Length: 435
Ligand code: DLL
Image (cartoon, rainbow, N blue to C red; front, side, top):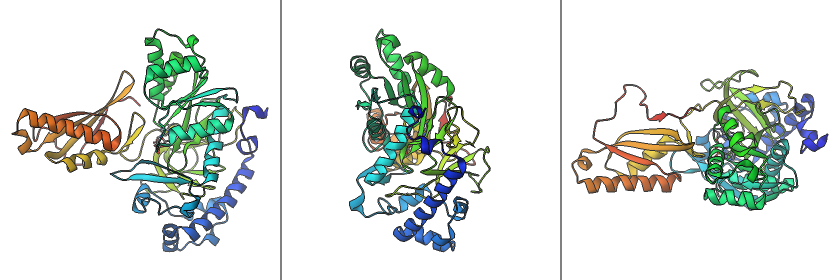
């Protein structure tokens, strides 16, 4: 029976045991951050909370929230709770402007992360004999190496393909016998279409399941992936600040994701007031790292909108489930798996000059690929310049966006004062994708 779980003791524990463990771990981590991170000591002192006041997991509501700006203010390593010689890995994801959000791991953190991903892979039926084809990007993004280490821990044979060169990926799948695919859901659709365009069918490859995440996706996309690739498609959720992929994962029921709550305590709060909401209500997900060493964030506001549920799951796991994220409480966009804040594009435009501070971002999904168009008003000077100068400007913006954000965009320069002005909050983003 235990074959179907990676760690049955943790994944199927009775609630009172999990809560007992969470309480112990919370009091330990709070003591640790209070003693080792000036930022947490200051914030707790400000609200008059001492580590001794935290005994039970329910005491968590007394603690202040942590937000992305706190990571920015303490860039790059200010929130780390261990000396740098204990940090064995650093990753990063986009911040709201310029600077990245930097996250760190000790050796034990990498172990813990691999355990979480191994749980996810086991839940989708992956075993030692499988070939795990990892088409998430390798590098500072947590997708590639996160899945890689988890699959290695599971004992599978890892094929670290990374992204790009899609036809070659299909050839590798066929020749190497890839049986489990890990990538963003939109890339999975693209791989499926490429397979078809290359004149092959799912019978020509050996894939049986896939683990997809890092961006929102719909049930419709799930069906599409399952048909195109002849597999079962499962969801995996996570964010760099908490650990990366593996914070939560889908099981055979394919309805909601089990949160590894023995390591990450989840709350749902009202995004406007911060008030904790009861199970079953929709709100912003907040996570506390109970066991991480290098960067144990406390009550971190994810901005992901979701619902938690303790309803019994047919897979036998007792870990609480979260719904698929239903949106964001901030303006972050995920374009081809890359997190993009409109303010990042704004600062690229400002740095380059010659455009007015009026722009619009038009996001669409064409042939299952996300597209981004930046429509920006020229300054009067640029508008009266030669066509060649205007074209050069467009190319410069495109190159700067690509090098700072890592995504390509179409740039359309328009006449001064041609974009609609709004009296309230300007509508910077038009997202035409149906997700
Ligand atoms: O996207 C980690 C990851 C890698 C997750 C691979 C799953 C697979 P970040 O780049 O920090 O980390 O982006 C985190 O992406 O707050 C969500 O808004 C979104 N996100 C992640 N997974 C999902 C998912 C990685 N399964 C942000 N469904 C999160 C919807 C997701 N959105």
